[in-house]
Image (cartoon, rainbow, N blue to C red; front, side, top):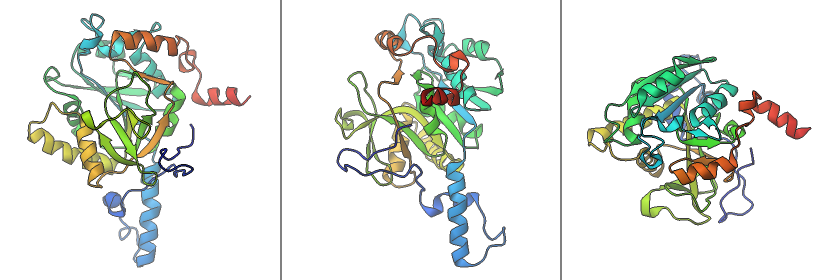
Length: 316
């Protein structure tokens, strides 16, 4: 994983790979008094030590949002789920499952909607050591990903990896996402569109830029749509999601919530740089054709290798 460098406006500045949020943000998850710590200085040290542990906790659960219709990939998605579309002979979903397994994930929650049975028939209730469960969105035709994410609020109560079901990427890139409160970002290429973020060079993400606020320049980084969240951050997100759903804003993107939380300081995310040539978001038939040139059939995990094997081979 390349070291994270500050955006071009701050040349030469390098961020620490872990960013702690405000001290009180994760305070509910630890209790110094219950552990017999009473001195003020020791309490501060206690919190910092335990909050660092929380932020560094490796997620073993993944949440996959796969309810969408994938209409721009028609006719391939007319009778199957978008994530089951083949890429160089291997489905998008199969590539993801192999990658999660290679990193030791033990639980996968999938939000399904369009062609839900095809996904459940394909995956079953487990894949290797990964236990799989499903949340069905009955409103997938009229809602957006904010609603799918909200549906998971009562099913997940642990650190987890959030990932969209139309992504393919070099599996070794996931290594940098295996700590809490991180966001995968990429420098922009011409094919990319959608939400971007700006960076402040100190605490990570300074703003989410949606719609017309997003610009194709060097100061804006594309969101890859992979996030990792601590338990405390996820609870804060759930509370904010509740307000959006109560206001009937089910057609919004979840990035609207993240943008609001970053702006008011209630969420801090550490950016992890994905090489722009090593991932692809499959939205259209043209995307699929282009991605097949980047991702051959036999990637490392499809050959049965682990990320550690790949790193060892490169070093040798």
